[in-house]
Image (tube, rainbow, N blue to C red):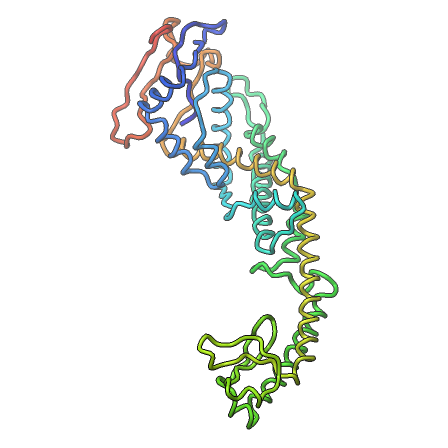
Amino acid sequence: MDVVKTGVPNSINEHDEPVFTPLEDGPREKTLGLLDYPAVRRRVADHATFAPARELALRMTPSYRTHDVEELQRETAEGRTLLEIVGELNLHAGADASDAVTRAALEGVLTGLELLEVAASLDVQRRARTSVLRAAQDGGPRRDKTTDRPTGQKIPELAELAEGIPDLEELQRQIRDRIGSRGEVLDDAASTIRSLRSQLRRAYDTVTEALTRIIQSAAGRESLQDQVISVRGDRLVLQVKTEMRNRVPGIVHDGSNTGATLFIEPFTTVDLCNSWRELALEEEREVMRVLRDISTLVGALADDIRRGAELTARLDFVLARARYSMAIRGVPVISRSARRPDQETPVPSDVAVRLLNARHPLLSDGAVPMNVNIGPGWS
């Protein structure tokens, strides 16, 4: 299935090609509905693997110029050739990173998970680029059947499309090397982070060991509601029975809904907790600096990322049409100007459109093929 000409042929041009005048919006939409074009469009969209390509398919409209139709069908034919060479090319990217790229371009700081979405999008673009260019090279030149002369690559238009996808492998590497699989900033993302996190763990262990000694003391066993360390407002506290608050002198950070429990930070651990929190804040600043640095890189390359996404979408749109064409055993339309002299069944001059063994694409294999001739000027 390819984009088709829809309209009324009202004249013949110098190439004996019918000139189609597009119908007005109302009749056109009615005609497309009668032809089940929206359903065909959805079928094409279902063969897309890259989300933006699906949107292109769902917005697909017929073309009315012979040149445009021939160009689109050349693309689809190349798409089929590409799939024959590579087998399949899945360009699924997961989450859409376009909003994150836009925010980075506005100097926003992205989270680790958002940066991973950007990296996943770049991976799809790189895969599209390398797969097509490798197939163009491996496919080798083709030869014209009548002259036996080389005509260039088998997929020249798709190769040109792929060459336009920017090579952003360095940005992708920067993200993967500094952001972990869960969106965390890795220890080696900056020279100070590993050391800070080591100090942070030691400071945390020191304060929790001091609190554990209080829990295990005689006063602790008597005055605590639960023998656990809790967190209130980034401070480490103990759950003290309200009537026993004087047995654990400290700062009250919170209380239970029933009023039976107070969350108290003992005075003896305040300085230890301060040291832990200072290190935690310094580590957070370093993490934010790494996220800001990478986000700045994304923002600086935002135009290239968008262009790569657009070209990847166009490429996968072509592949969606090719997959659908293969699924329904579609064949290209041949215009009179493109028909070779040796091809059988010449089209009479009083026929504008000839369909041979045509089948409705939504019908099953049991559909009976039919031949249709449409003359110039027919309504």
